[in-house]
Image (cartoon, rainbow, N blue to C red; front, side, top):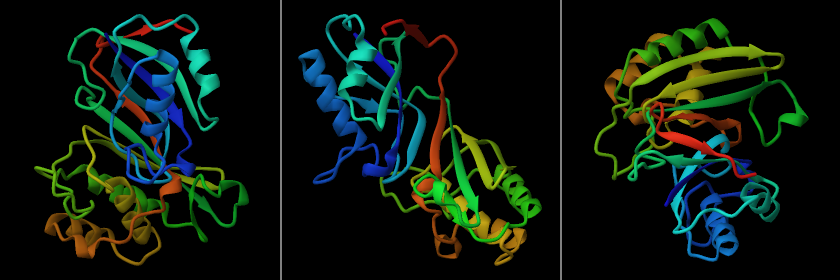
Length: 252
């Protein structure tokens, strides 16, 4: 039987979601703890990859297990997991081949930017020392929504067959002393959100114009993009699946 789990995690101590040689990952910890608790070899497949230090408010994974999950499963496994990883819900997919990664229809990321010196944001937000031009940030967010090819605003990844993404929404908000960039799309390329955020912030600082930002996208030239925003400000915020695909199973 296939199960989906909705989880959250603080990525500060991990080298991302994906299992890596000689580095701790969220996937590795979950595989180990689920295997021990269920008495079977469990291999989780996640809804995507997150980089070293990136956090997740809502992340989905699936795994196959031959039996019913035990009573009190969520509480039992959460007491066994480290404090920085939590299972929130269990779902039963209504299609046998449902896949946490490939069945997702959209993902939403948020990037938090602390303005000025803020000790409480260390590890949880990027930072700028002066308030960027919010009007320009909104302008380049709107420009981003016009395009679908983000070769210039992503890391080189030879496994990518194309660089096309459908941007569903992109906007900035200001909440107290933090700027928050929200972006939703049907898919994201490697490093894409952090590179977009880092390049947008250069527009907000007046280093480049909105027109120059647009030219970077149009010309598909990675060398013109600015550095990626720091990982600790990025959160996978939500993942959407087709309506009715996942039915929540009550196992506290």
